Amino acid sequence: MKVKTILMFVATAVAAISLSACGAKKAAKMGVVAQSSEVLTKTAPVELVDVAQTIDFTTTLLPYKKNFVTPQMSLRIDEIRVEVGDHVKKDQIVATLDKNQYNQSAVQLRNAEQNLARMKSVYEAGGVSRSQIDEIETSVTVLRETVANLERNIELRSPIDGVITGRYNEPGDLFAMAGNADGGIGVLQVMQIDRLKAVVAISEKYYPQVYKGMKVSVTADVYPDKEIEGVVNIVYPAINTATHTFNVEVIVPNAKEILRPGMFARTEFNMGVRESLVVPDVAVQKQMGVNDRYVYVVKDGVAERRVVEVGRQVGSRVEILSGVAAGEEVAVTALSKIKNGTAVKVVE
Image (tube, rainbow, N blue to C red; front, side):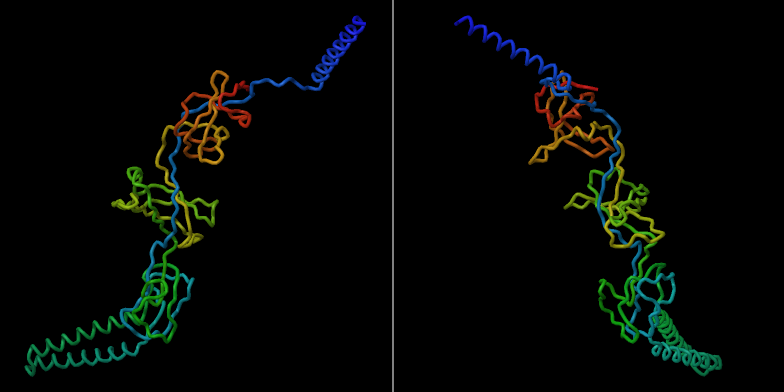
């Protein structure tokens, strides 16, 4: 009885071994391989390269010049010859004012000049004194200045080439020396926009790198694919003690007038080149819940988690400011399977 039991046990064991062997062979035929404890990964070296130190600053575009067309005295407006959006030339007449006061003063001037001519003849004949002639000449001079001033004011001219951007009165209005909707005093506002300017506040640490004539890349938010080359025109000499920044005026070409004053823009300054460590951007991971960035440095078949400080994006690579050294290898694949201390095998 015992012999029979032993024989049955042996037969069962042999059958199990046979089934196991058959299963392994079948798995091998189907391409299933026993899983290794090592994680297969590819690596890339930490490289030291020259990286352009470009800094972006946001700003608002401003007109190159802005003027309010303003008479020097309160007169009734006779005619306005332009509308908002019209292009004007320097010294073009854009409005006229009431001429009654001018006409009256011009008549007074002509009468005074005629009287002066008569009195000079009398003076030469000895009929009046020199002081009387001087008094009349003074009156004529004052009238001439009054007429000239009135003449300048009855014809309002644009002080610059530009575009009319504000109209604050209508014909028949009595012009008053009071502020308008745009914070100025005038009948009209004109702006030069064939070039614009941008005033940018830059951190004081970059003061040595910024200079007049420096090229600046300018991009307006409404035209994100159109990059325009601006030029630094003024580097303000004083540092703001509250923000520790200094202002820089950038001139932005705008011959086709596609940009407009008030548009939001981004300016990119190239502050030079610096040798920096870079790694492929896929190697840098972000820790959930915090802002820490880290990479896995592979050495002697083991992955080591390193917290790194990242800088700017350089194409498909990212600048590393601290945490790794040049020549070290970082994992770039199978990162979801790697932990600190994981055994890894580097594959090509």
